[in-house]
Image (cartoon, rainbow, N blue to C red; front, side):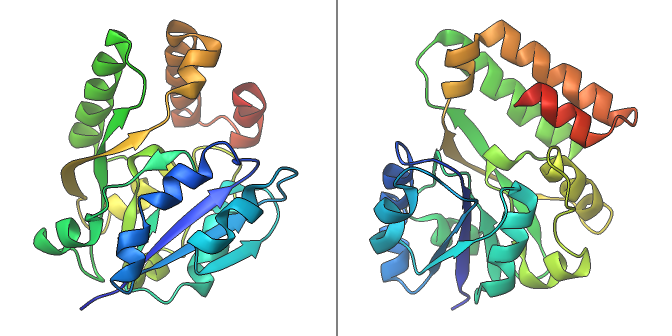
Length: 224
């Protein structure tokens, strides 16, 4: 049986990390591992997570760097990179095994947003359609890669934003992604906090600016 390593970058996620980890405990019981990579939280993220993970690692607060650090310590055949506010299906390992995911493949889950507003249903459908047509995935879609193919592309690039888009662009040159229709539930908190229209517009603008060559460090300042 191949082993999965779920790698979770986190920074001040005490309000969400408990629910995220609860979904993964059955898989831990089946022999898979969960790694939390903390970027210097000042809340109780690490304390809450301690009993629900196999390793708590710490490094500088940069999501790409955090995920690379987790991957460097992971023992699994397949890495799943999961946001700290996202809920993965408790049978994810069996779902991926049934799709033939292996050390030489990569892919992502379809996404469902946690909010109830009808616009979230439209947004998630568009996100899934975009990923299907372009082959590009974002981190909130729970990107997974075989250990071999992840090493082959040298992991995430050390940039503060668009690290997921950049990685999947390189992976696409090796093989197309495996699409998992089972959804990962991603928090809609950013849309709810800043407004749906404003957040969608900002996302499109940043993606466009990245595509035409803007520095991700400058884009990160606008995003955060």
